[in-house]
Length: 102
Image (cartoon, rainbow, N blue to C red; front, top):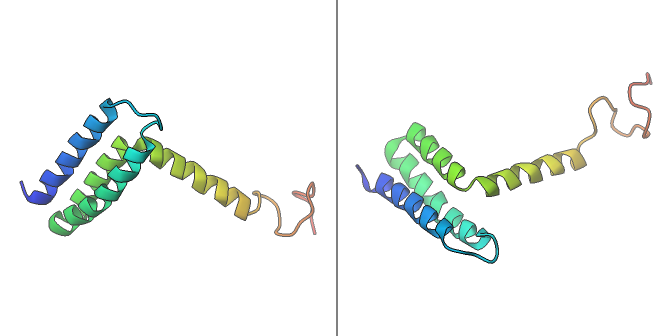
């Protein structure tokens, strides 16, 4: 086993140990630290073992840190709704005129 994969597995063990300790901020500071450490490890694993193993390690990290991933997906969805228009409306159409012919 090469050092990059050992580092990834040690990261998982560290994440689980940190999750066992009590926290007043619901582990968010620890999650930010794990993300900051994990991103270079994923890059290292991808560079040394190829993109397939890199994606497996990325999925492993996302499953350990599932709440930051869920919150990111919700944030992206909210921003998409705010920036775009609702389905079936023309850009610049008046509210309540969905589906009407121009």
